[in-house]
Image (cartoon, rainbow, N blue to C red; front, side):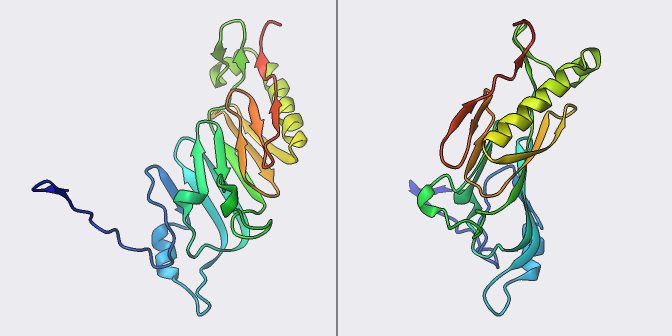
Length: 197
């Protein structure tokens, strides 16, 4: 708001459990409203049995098991974009393995399809019906390359181009242009391009 050349900052109210999530398109399960109702316990914690962070259209991260979500600044800790997700992109903020969000997680990324080298187009679901032989090859490449970065392939849905996999700890995983990046920065090119060789 601008008033006579002065910018006024309207303070946002602090969430009752101290969680910060203000970026557009992001949400959590349990919702911020449910977490507010739960509140902090006598130890100043907000323990949930599972926690999911979602960015609509890009992906989601599911953390199973007891997790204290009090005072998590998700705007600083989690980033999801086109075919990538990062947790603790600032390594100086990263806690020890098993603490905070640096723990086992199930990740789902959307809009991942094989590329047909002959046309330069992605092979989306309707095209799989005509050439179903591409799907097993694509899934096998995902499984192999995820194994190389110590992640576990769970499922691939050609309808949504959704890849689900599990990691034991977490920093950054990207599949943009068939490039995987793991927590220690190892780059693995996976030639997921299908079509004429």
